[in-house]
Image (cartoon, rainbow, N blue to C red):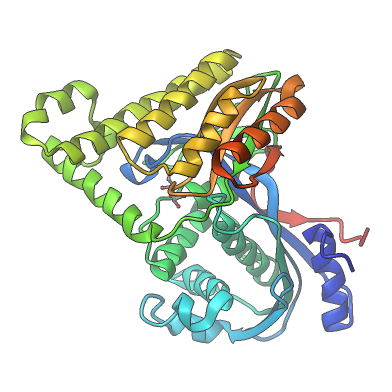
Amino acid sequence: MSTQAHPRERVLRAFEREYGRPAEALVRAPGRVNLIGEHTDYNDGFVLPMALDRAAWIALAPRDDDVVRLLADDLDQRGTFRVESAARRDARGDAHAERGGWLEYPRAVAWALQADGGHALRGFDGVLSSDVPRGAGLSSSAAVELAVAAAFREASGFAWDPIDVARRMQRAENHWVGVASGIMDQLIGAAGVAGHALLIDCRDLTTRSVPLPTGTVVVVLDTSTRRGLVGSAYNERRAQCETAAAALGVAALRDADMAALEAIRATLDDVAFRRARHVISENARVLQAVDAAEAGDAAAFGRLMDASHASLQGDFEVSSEALDQAVAAARAAPGCLGARMTGAGFGGCAVALVEADASAAFVAAAAAGYERASGRAGSFLVATAAAGAGTERDLTVR
Ligand code: GLA
């Protein structure tokens, strides 16, 4: 079998090889790219991500007991655990990445689904494969977590409430990785709408699907750099935002405006001031971008992406040399309407809004420009907005 096979085919074929019978169910959960609204989710703010047509897939058959047997086909590694033992563990103290490697993700999911009067789970035999690039800021781990959650749903038959599942997966991630991440990645992965971006209000978790401006495509530019020490820098940003919110006397930066921030400028240290300025201005940009998308004003949408990048680079300080080079190369390429870093930052991916009929020329020029500037080959993906996590009815091996 070619290693290039799509993960859907990989998991269906590998299931038959591994367990000697066809799979009984197939689930997928997408990665995501955030179009605008960065480092706003944990400030109760607004984000506008879309689910990607890159996803984690699991082929499975439910079991009569509470054992989970899983083959991670991409790693060629097998693992087994009991749902009941996952429920009893303290995920922070015990379920640590370093201890059990990849299998700790499914265990953390089993823990989070059962926690606090959650769902009764049955086990399954499964095979997992994903084509979401790892560590690139495209939510590869949220995709795996949501795919495992969807597999448990197939095996156990609980009702799937995307918001509840997203909250539980966020908890699994927070406890397991120790990064105090927001809800964006899990909620877009659970609730994405095909062909649309999703405006998420990260305070009340309401969502609205937003069409991309007509005649445009979204291109993801992977710098081939991977972020290091992202956990500590991320948690530090979050703490700085909380300091600024406290100084402003508001529950979260979502509740502040630029005039209020200017009014207390003299009392705030420069770093906290700039962090808050990013969040407040970024929240406003998200809402303006939604208006631009709904009015079909692609140029305005692109300008907001450019402004978002400048703010993340100068005020929030989460860009990197490679991300800046990718953004500059994108802006110099034909058909580019706007470009910015995407995700937590420090490495990984940038995203550009591009005129659809220029997309091939854009990719060629941006790839060459990025390689010239950085000495690295990037990889480029013209993205299609996919639906959130779900069950595939067609189990035919193609
Ligand atoms: C990571 C986190 C998200 C969000 C982004 C930054 O992807 O998981 O919750 O905070 O960074 O916007």
